Length: 538
Image 1 (cartoon, rainbow, N blue to C red):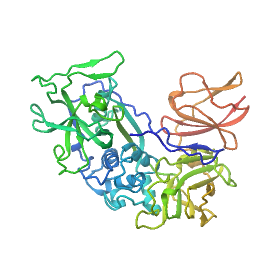
Image 2: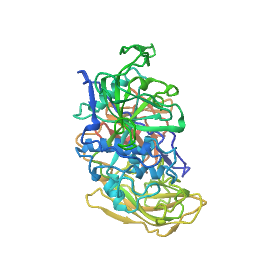
Image 3: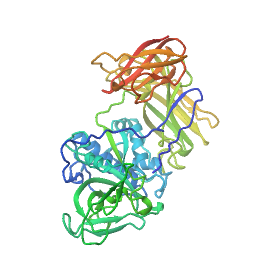
Image 4: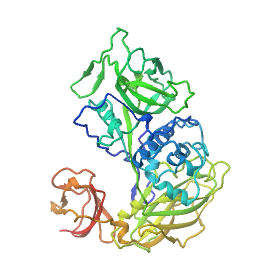
């Protein structure tokens, strides 16, 4: 699994945002009471029936088809055996695979989940079927994109299984999401299936069922699967001494290592279909010991980490862009969105790029895929760009297109504003704009940003921040336990500085030098409320 992302500086003077930091911390609290000896979320109504993936799409099949579907349906208390509550892995795979069904570089789950985090995913019903359009289809139609925007990943994180608390944290997640929920979560792992070895459980719970005793080591056969549960009593005699023992070495560095760890296993679901011949109808047990075994010796991959995700189960966009584009080779263009705090702006001061989708992606096909139209209508969520603005400011929102060649056109662009409840559409005066192959193409829509767009309902006064200057550097002190991030802007809306998401206690030095004057401080608290206030810096 690769953590690298694409981050191209479209505008030299602009603040460019990309998904370089894909991972966000998902807290897992270990309960005060002992965990149950077994959990199986794969039999719950939130887990969709086993299916057979198409091509080399295992990361998408497991990350979206299983994990995201489960987590969203669990959050919404919805049954996963109907297409209206399932999510198509093909949607994300077709952004990642360069248009090929056998693209082995696109099959890991983090990229797929990040696409859903950025702009959402349709349901299988809205997409047209679980495998529809494989492997080149891109969706067209603003209404479909808008509905997809409501189905979102919130956070993506990993659990280090080499950490002494790793297994406990994973089991807690599977039991109650690590937060006391009535139902637990699921997770994804990577492995090599080249030469993986199976056996059967000889005694105890699940006698006669399939158990994987070793994964492969060849990266050419890297594969993603889904963890749905655990059982502390599953046993397998690895050292063939006729005993089942669980001696686990603990080094002073806090890393767990395996000695003759023979008791306990995870429940795994694969995506090759119930007739795959793997395990018991594509399900099997995985001994805990393979979580800490080096991948070069048949353990799990991705530095012995498993991936977990949370979702936004009631998210609704506040502002979006509706764009109609024409291009015959979609892998030669990249889209991004931006904003400037003036209605007269011709270029954005802040730009957000897409890590994988709409970024020289999908292969040398028309926008809608093989045999499809070169013209497509898409929707892009730009709610996050409102954070760049102070309330009541005029603004221009941009679609930015960069091309590596070929003829293309931005046919039309509209700003869709949902902040007042009913949608308000503002159309750009620019239509049928040819996409340049030598420089960036900007198409803007100007509007006045309403108070409600940038400031949700407040239930308490915002916290106070204190600024001071020490040897020319500006420092700030605030109630850090309530603050998730803080941004500082000039009065005309230009971003000047920011603070880390988890600042240490006490005074924090701003990374940017600031002259004396009045500034706009923009921040988000732990309750998800956005706040903006003016503050003097002397």
